[in-house]
Amino acid sequence: MAFQGKKLINDPNDVVTEFIEGLVETYPGLQYLDGFPQVKVVLRADVSGGTYDKVAIISGGGSGHEPAHSGFVGEGMLTAAICGDVFASPPVDSILAGIRAVTGPLGCLLIVTNYTGDRLNFGLAAEEAKSEGYKVETVIVGDDCALPPPRGIAGRRGLAGTILVNKIAGAAAAAGLSLAEVAAEARRSSEMVGTMGVALSVCTQPGQVTPDRLGPGKMELGLGIHGEPGAAVADLQPVDVIVSHVLKQILCPETNYVPITRGCRVVLMVNGLGATPAMELMITSGKAVPKLQLEHGLAVDRVYTGSFMTSLDMAGFSISIMKADQAILQRLDAATKAPYWPVGVDGNHPPSKIPVPLPPSSSTKIDESLGQPAQLNEQGHILEVAIEAAANAVINLRDELNDWDSKVGDGDCGSTMYRGAAAVLEDIRNYPLNDAAETVNEIGASVRRVMGGTSGILYSIFCKAAYAQLKASTQSVVTSTNWAEALEASIAAVSKYGGASAGYRTLLDALIPASAVLQERLNAGDDPASAFVLSSEAAVAGAESTKHMQAQAGRSSYISGEILASVPDPGAMAAASWYKAAALAVKDKCEAS
Image 1 (cartoon, helix red, strand yellow):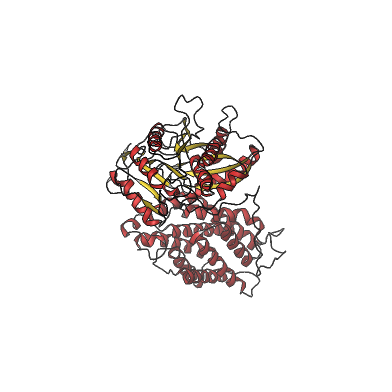
Image 2 (cartoon, helix red, strand yellow):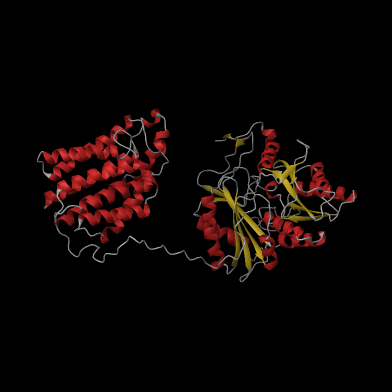
């Protein structure tokens, strides 16, 4: 169902001018022409048309693609960017004003994305400027590879590959080349690049409703950067599959959109469309590079990953591949002050990157005796069933924990605990189960290896404290009293380093009452297994009671009491779950023996 899009704006009609005002406030090297609202031109603050002694590079188009093109204004790239309204080509008068503002005796190059409105408006402005005595050349960029040829008179759409052409032209102009030479380099590079996009959502224009053309679980291949329909709608696939399809489409020998064959050197650009997290863009780049190398036989010389030419708040990405040679790489590596050109990318890209080995820990002592013994003693068997039951309980509770945590935290408690439990189950075959202290220490190591965030470090502290307490015992067999003391020491350590105590709505609200009941029943002379089960019931009751607590630690402390009252603390429920499962498994094992 369509609904009004949410935007952090004032009047939808003012978004472009207010964007430009914010841009120039942020970057001292940028300025704009005093012609709002009709004339919206961003230009270098250090350039004056009458005295500028290099070729001016001008690009632009409809707004909504930021940082393109105004974010690429700066020495070594664009001299000016002409901004239209959202998804609307800038009018001729704006383009002409930009030409007059920055063009000196050497002339200017207009780099235009291949859309009919841009071609017409920039074309008429170029002719008008020429009639006023300016030297003007124009390069049209059409790098879209999503739609099969022929495209009639419209041709291929201009996409993110335009940014690479802008950079190459800007570097050539900064090097002092003539207008004809700069135009030749830009034109050549525009013929070397191909782009294809994939969208997971359609963008929402300011003040308009959000379209619902793409349903759940769908993606659109070849969607245009103005939200126009693409080549096909398909079921969402893993990024590996999507990247393979896009690369094959761009490099398809039948369409021959780009003159790239096996053995060529290339530049890769992975471009976010506006609402794609950096994490997903980096995943895409990480999959694209080896596919280009191994499946297509290409040498990847540069990789640019980020949001360069967006489509407002569209989720998705585009991939651009440009055939490279030393001249193109030199232009791409040349210095620029354009604020949104990525830094730190210049320099040869290695064929493959081997991770740096982990430095050895000076405190680690390799004990060859560790590992599961050939035969388990009675304690080892009990420990084994307790660990397996506890880990499986956490695994089975993953979705419920995530659901609770989505209401009071960041929604990943179940997934985090699941990783720790799965690691324990995987590693248990190497645990020295006949040695309780060392086994607890190894559990802590498994957890620390895979569990991130606060939960991971708290459970690592928990295990390390228990290990130290158990190790301090002089008895050859660990008694129930030793276990109770280890639990008490672990709770104290977690409280000390985590800062929480009873009533703070944390895992301690399950473990503290469990510890108290365990000590009480053991002191009363109860059977240890029965005491363990009774203490587990206290753990469950303590976890459930967190519904009535106001959080004082963790992310839940930022949540209102009304919301907190609807769910228990996920961390406490996880602790109660594994504790109870272990207790019941120990009791069953002892009764069966």
